[in-house]
Every structure is written in C-alpha cells, then in structure tokens.
Length: 254
Image (cartoon, rainbow, N blue to C red; front, side, top):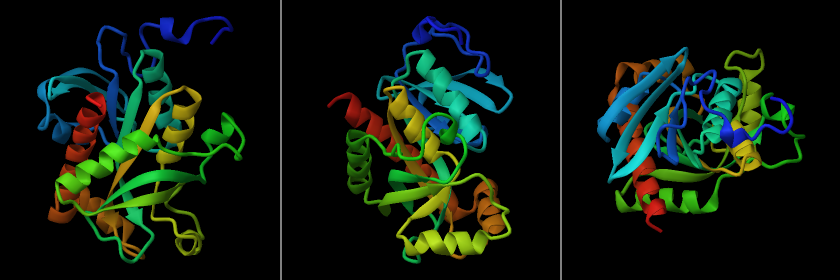
C-alpha cells in the first residue's frame, strides 16, 4: 500500500471481496467455511455476502446486533489477511471460534478454552513486529465471554495457548510435552496472529477454542469427529458459538 493512503478509505478488499456497505462492527472468525452454516442457525436474517477462495462471509443479526461471520481458512497468514481487510472496512471487534488440541490432562473434549494470551510459535506475526511484543486478548471481551460461560453453566478454562504453523513436525510429541510442562492449555494456528495484529490495528480481540483432541490424544481422530458431527466436539462447537454471540451482546450493551 502506498504511503499516505488512509486504510479506512479503502473500498473493495482484494481477498475478502467485501466493501464497506454494511454497518457491522463485530465479526466472528471460524477457520472452516462450512462452520459458518452452524453459526447461521444462531442468527436472524442471515445472508451470504460473498465466497472467495477460503474466505466465506455471512452477515446476520443476534439480538438486533449486526455481526459478520468470516472464515479465515487454516493458519496465521490466511487469518492475517482477514484481520487486515476487516480492519480496513471499520470492523472493531473480532472473536475467533476455532478448534484446539488440549495440552493439559484435566481439559476434556468439548470443553472451551478462552485464551488470555498466546505463545507466538508461528511465522506470521514475526513479519510484523519482533517477538518481544505480547499476544494478549482484550480483557473486557474475555470477561464478557467467561460471564457467558458461567451464565450457561458451561465447562471452560482461561489461560495461555500456543499458536503454531505445522501439525506434522518430526518433533511434535516433544514440542507438545515441552509446552504442556509450561502450563499452556492448548494449541491452535491462528490465535496469536489475531491478538498481535488486532493490537497493532487497535482492534478488540478474543479467541474461544473448542477442544477436539485431548492431551496426548489422536489429532486425526479428533478433527474427523468434529467434521463428522460427533457429539462432544459438536456440542463444544455449539457452545462456543453461543458464548461468542452472548459475549458480543453483553459487551455491546455495556
């Protein structure tokens, strides 16, 4: 982008293929485009705006609040594109609703992890700022989300997660064991990118992760259960969507 161009003056975004002809300030960010169909069940007047590459966008309403739902695809680079382009269009609050593998034995399949911070074990944020910059969630959003969990009597955990770039390194068990010993709750691929870019772009961000793989569990089996609609991962997914929307409603009216 040429120096001097106002980020907020941009119209059609090249990857999302969205312009600023909507009034939504809030966005939910699932990774999988198919997960948007499940989010739509919680919204009124939901309509698909555009579907370009891995980026699918729906606009709907929850308790009369306009909310965008935009799929990010997998990983930090793809999520970073979504965050930047939504910021260009005036969205101010982003909540990731994704899946996670647990790194602690007491965390069960279908539990929710509300990340307060993230280990930046990925490459995307390093291209923006050095590793001394923290990846942390917005405190008020985290508070709204935990209140929603409590109100609906849902099992949840708050703490630090690890974001990474690969499921298939030759040292995966060793890496997971290391971070487990450091008290990290779970792992995903996008949360740290959301937190860092969100802070750099003056956005409010949070991340709710649905646990689909237990500590030392089988990654392939856990993801397949989620895709196939098995009960515990599916229930966790429904719970995280509800919590995200209730959190937005509470935050909006606070």
